[in-house]
Image 1 (cartoon, one colour):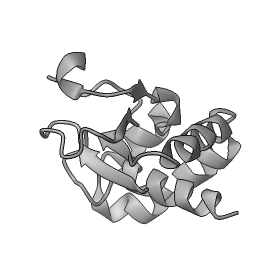
Image 2 (cartoon, helix red, strand yellow):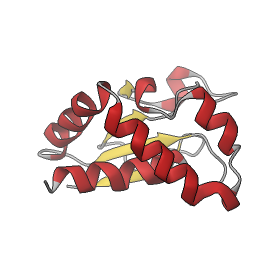
Image 3 (cartoon, helix red, strand yellow):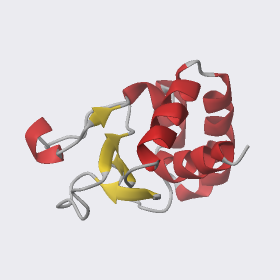
Length: 121
């Protein structure tokens, strides 16, 4: 099983996977029914300050990723999140849903890599 990334605005590609919205803010213009998610883990998203500073500027992505990893390392919720993801991965794929238009420069990309790295420890 694996972690996949999916834009929350698109039709679900894999409806059999465990779908987690990893944004701190609810995505604009989408209903909770249409999101088809199993869990909204808003606490795992980057802080409001970091999110606003980043502003989805690809030029800032490397620094954003570094700062977000530090937030994840310090946050109490991170261990619980990783444990739940690892448990789900034993039986099904886990899909991190995100609302950012840029599919390469967003927190879900950083979070996926972080969880995978922590899982190997």
